[in-house]
Amino acid sequence: MVTVFIYILTVVFVICSLLLTLVVLMQRPRSEGLGAAFGGGMTDSLFGAQTTDVLTKVTIWLAGIFFACTLGLALLHAKADSATDLSSRLKARAAATQPAKPETPAAAEAPASTSTPAQPAAPAPAAPATK
Image (cartoon, rainbow, N blue to C red; front, side, top):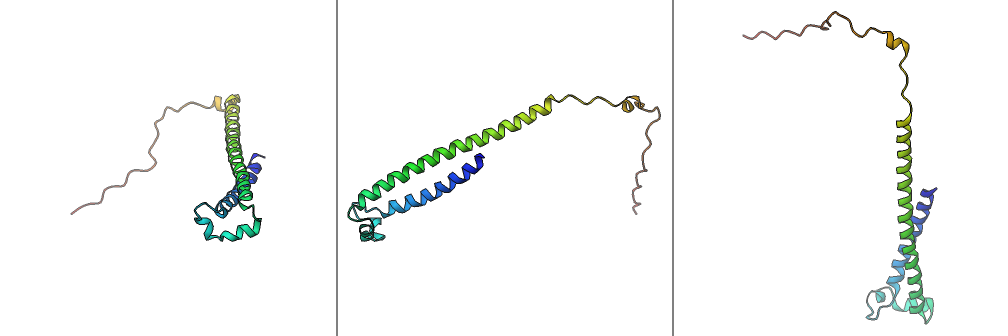
């Protein structure tokens, strides 16, 4: 369930980042820098005479959403990591506390060893003769 929220918040984060970049570039700086390259009069005709106020408010809102998404993603990733750590620790603890299986009677009755020494499977090959 946490991963679904992570994916949704990541999409919102990317869209907000792109919109924030676009809005910042559309703003007309005092020195008419990069804003003039995108058409300084375009924003006046699009948003009316109060272009600076509208773009400033949109920038503030998008920056707030950007920071909220950043904080939310950090918290969700921390929760997802701690959940996987907790589940792996619980599985390890459950495996460690399981009782050992008792020996079967057939294994207990088998002779431990024989008194005859083990025979090699095959003799080692002889070295080739040299001249």
